[in-house]
Image (tube, rainbow over all chains, first blue to last red; front, side, top):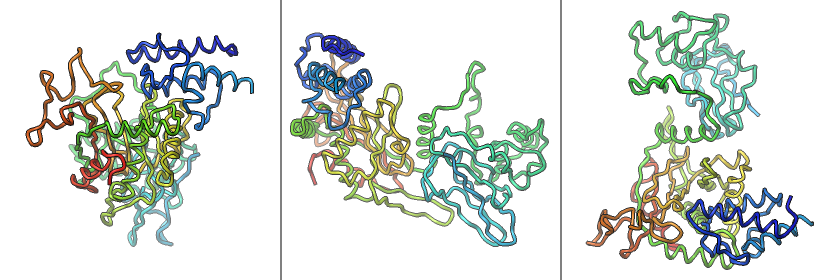
Length: 88
Length: 412
């Protein structure tokens, strides 16, 4: 299980790039703090699949009320959220 | 856990009754209160209803069979792939007890041809469908009028599988799909119509909602589905069905709105069901439906979350299809379809040219007042709202009214 923020970010970016690629989009220019839904690199269904993977990959047991921009809106926010959850 | 439905006693002096009507088949989904069989004696007839929701796992008799009172008539299960308890094997029809057993398909065929098991020579330990088919073919017999044809009987001539086919039991999701399609084919008067709509007001509505609630996922489709739920409360016909029974034709209106919503999870298509959706406010509905979508993709749905739809909504907007004609869920009258003819906000294109309802790059299809209709609004690529509806329940006018109301957020 990844517990290093840089490693989590690396895994998140790799997966999002793969998901975007399946949709014919390029996520390589997405910064860590860009808001993913606003970036257009994945559509809503692709983002849903990405978050389901994130939940399982880091064993987070995400709750419905946590599906917000504030918690999971960017790669950086997702990495921070995962780290905080894993240290809880 | 499987549960049995037993053969009821009709008269004190009759220990056997005749299975007059078999209303279900193995693999079908039934709701509590649905009539599953009708049995009769010389003096009376009784309809037997399912006492719970469930899938029919086994049917232990065919129309025309004499059944022992108290024997198991059929088994219901939580899922379509539950194992039938061993005791099921002991519940043979009364007229076959002690004379060898017939397979379920053989019994079905016997009923269709009005034959008794003793009439047909059996080639092995059990009387099989092949035995019955050979018997009727040799004598040139035809099924009785009104008998339910088996899939084999309805297969097109020459439709035999190639020898290379590998046959295995269908997955539960496939069985569910077959049950839906079969119900529509055999029971509903499924009809389809569609209208163009301008997606911009809905997009703006969804963007504002997402901003207010800080949502990660676009609420567009859940908001459309919520509006459908609201409209279903105002138009009870959209949340209803018709039952055709031997004792008459009945209208059934649902007291709750259980929204069926299609979710594509990998290669699997689910119809997740948000029960009692009318009790939720808009934010609560969006959150609940989002949670169902997420758990569908994670393969973490409960069986109860996949049944009992009273109305449906399906979007293929993600794929930029020009038209999408969905199948009705069993015992429903409406399945709305939604697409926008665009991908990620851009008009759908093929090799850089507009696709969908265009010819040589210009909008094609029908016109209204001399202007293009169909997949355009004000000359721009537009969304399409369609509906597969049961014409036994709704008229085309009803369906159009529903779609027109759905096309406008917060409209009347």
